[in-house]
Structures are given as C-alpha cells and as structure tokens.
Image 1 (cartoon, rainbow, N blue to C red):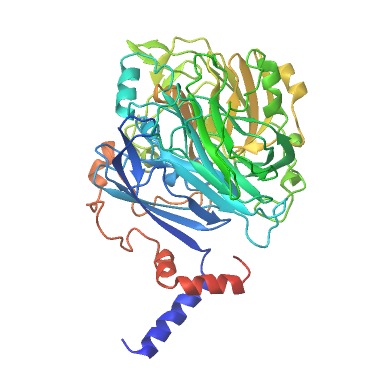
Image 2: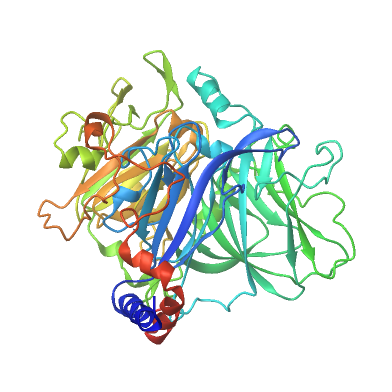
Length: 593
C-alpha cells in the first residue's frame, strides 16, 4: 500500500474519531482458573488474564467501554458492572435477569458508555457464587480535564480491594448452601488478593505473601477502597494516619476525617491519605471483621504494609485497635449517617451535584422491602424479600418482552410485606417510568446487609433501628443526602432511599451479601416507557446471546480464542484501535478529553 493511500486512511480515521463519538477504551478479559495460596493453603481462584485480582478498568466521563470477556471456566459466566449507570442499556448489565450466560469456551463483548459519571466502582462475575473465588477488579472513572475535582490533585492513586475469604472455592461454598448449611466464619481477609502480614506468629503462619504499598513522605494519595467480599462488613484503617473521606460510588462527599471506616459488602469509598508520619518504621493497613465477636474472629483480619520510601524498619507491635462500639450499634450508625453530599462540587458536569433538589419532588410510589432470616421453602433453604424468593427466568426479561415469551415472569411484586406464605416466584416490580419512588429496606434478618440497585444511584435519606413507619419521614435528610448505589441496612433496622426512575430497562435490586443473594433475596424493576419511540431504550446488541425458549435464535458463536471481528466490536472502536494516536490528539484539540 503506497503512502498516499495510507495518508487517506489516516485522515479518515482522524475525521471519524474527532467528529463521531466519544472515545473508546478496550479490554480483553480471559477468565480462567489458577492456583494460588493467599492464606497459605493452595486453592483454585478465578483470574483475569492470569491475574488475581483483575486489572483496573480505567475510563473517563462519557467514554465508551468495550470489554471482550472470554469464558475459559468450566461453567457459565456473566460479568457485572455494578454502579455503572448504563443509560438505556440494561442489555449489558451482566445478571441473569438481563443477559443469557456466556457458555464455557465462548466469549461475549460488553459495550456500554459511562455516561455523565465519575468515581470508584468494581466489577465481578455474578453467577453461581463465583465472586467468592475471585474474578473481580476495580473500575475508575475519571473527571474530564475541564471539570475540577473538589480537592488538590493527589500525588497518586492507590486501589485497595478488601474481602472476607474462604480456603474452599465457590463450588464447595455453593454446595454448603444448597444442602441447607451456613458458611460459618471465613478463614481470613484478603487485601488485594493477598493474605495478612505476619503481625502475630500464632495467628498468621509463615510464608504468606502480603500486600505492600509504597509511598513517599509528605505526599497525599487517593485510596480507593472496595469491599468485594462475600458477607462480612470490614473496618478499614491505616496505623497513625487519618482517612479523609472525599467520594463514594460516584459522588463527592463533604470532606471529614476518620481514624477508621466501616465498609460493607459491595461498597466503595475514596479517601485522601497524607504521608505525614515519621519513617522510623512501616505502618499497618488493616481490614478486620466488624459486628462480630472479635475474640473469636481475631484471625479474620487482613493486614498489609504501608511502606515509606525512607522507612527505617518493618512494622512491629499490635495492630491499631478497631472501634470499641461493637455492642452499641446506635453509635456505629452515626458514621454512615454523617456522610453528606458535597453540594458545591461539580460531578461529571460543571453543575453542582446538589443542584438536583430531590427533597422537593413528590413521591409517586413507596415500596417497603422486608428481609427475614432464611427459611425452608419446598424443602430448600431460601432467602426472601416480602415473602418472595426470586427464581431467575429461563429467558432474560426484556428479551422475553421483545419476542413475546409468555409466562417468563410476573409483574406482581408486592409493594409491602403482606404476611403471605413465603414462596419461590419470578415476581418483578412494575415500576413507572419517570416515577420518583421511595424504597424502604427493612432488615429483620440477624445480619448486617448491603442492598444494591443496578442502573441507578439513589439518595440515602434515612436510617434507623426498629420498624419504619410513615412518621419516620420526619427525620429524612431532604437536602444533602449522599447519592450512591449500595447502602448498608443494620440488623433490626431500616434504610430509606429515594430514586428517580429515568433509566428505562430492567434493573436488578438485590442484597449484596452473596449467601443471601444466592438464596433468592433479589428482584428486578421493569421500567418501560409506554410511549417508546426508539429514543429511550437501546435495541438489543447485535451480539446478544439467546437462551431458554429463544435458544433457536442463537447464531453460531466463536470460541473464546477467536479473533475479535467487526461483528462484535463497534466500528468506531475498531477505528480507535487502529488510529489511537490520532484519537488522543483530536480530543485534546476539541477539549473533550
């Protein structure tokens, strides 16, 4: 090919990238099993491209993200991207109510836009308790350069993934639950996939690989901390250092210092940490089990090392002490209730985050969702919301709608506990498009729970112990409640959230605690524009997977080792790969980077 033809191609690429769409970031994920020993016992974990945990997905506001997921496991797979508010595009959500699974040795390309978003999130495999074996990794969505962040740019970005961990893999844990058992106390806590530093020769065996974070004295770092675990709330702290809270799940907070912070299952936070201590020794980074008998659970503690570049020696001595309010949960609740939205900071756009006056909007519907301890239904241990233990449909819900699959689900989820006999069902919330709803999460279980809503951020306006009543609204925060996608609900307590239903599709509403989720404690919100004209919901992607009664519609798919083709990658994404240097240049010229 001569130079003139190459020049024409390059000009075409530059033109397409500068004037067509927002930039793309492209990833290739190969999920497979590897053997590691994070707690000193060899075990099978789920790795991404041979790494455990997986790599960072790094994007910027409004970027398009395309991730080609290869299933090299021996069972079905779906990848979920909780917290990513996929506008009009629940087709890429990665849970069974919205997607058919990726079969072993096959692949699927997820493609979505991080529309008007910033913040810290994580991804994970959503099927069959697989997250208990890994397959998770962080997501960072950066502000565009033209949008200022509400603090001085940090000197570095540090990701911390914390989780409770068992030395049995997800299939063994699944078997325990299927047989009606409880998982019991975890074997430990991992920090970035590694076991604890040997701070105690009795509790921690020798030879365990631990995480070490290298820092320079005097500098300030942004720590993005995610609890990617199974069911344990964890208290996070760094010996001798303050944690300045600045962001949670895509929204900037009023900045306040904490000596330690509770992070519940599925939650993500950003802290600024300044290296303002002397360097006579290294410092402990600790994640320990919360709301448990600490003397029994002492070994369920993750310990990493904060290493100053001029450190004079290793960390020694006892760990920094955890909060002392274990038997006073009223006091512990003060911490999440203190989190407030920074209403003067810009989010993904120049307008302040607090310019949306949610407190003055009329509520159109109220849903009281009650969770109870698991119980036997038809001889099987199941968990429920409002007496319903959810059973996933054979055909994803919107595919069933488009292809008129009868009986795939029911639109009869009760808006409050009705005292009916608990049963298993495929019951959805028939939510109203552009409604503004109040959801009360009433936890009458004995465990701390986290609830998550796909496709949305909600305002956490109230939280207390006891039973929610209508008079509880008198104490709602109607001005600067934090917006987020995962909130804690204390045992014997309730949490109230408000959410505007402006994102059409079918969105999962679930408990994040994996054991309760696996046992059926979830439902979906079906949100359809009755005047749909093609503008409010995207069409199914060309590479949609069919299953159940629609299996015959499935085209022949490639093996997971196949080359990527334009059938599975948006044409602009392909252009972005070929002409990446031009993409970067032209977006800087247009000041959209």
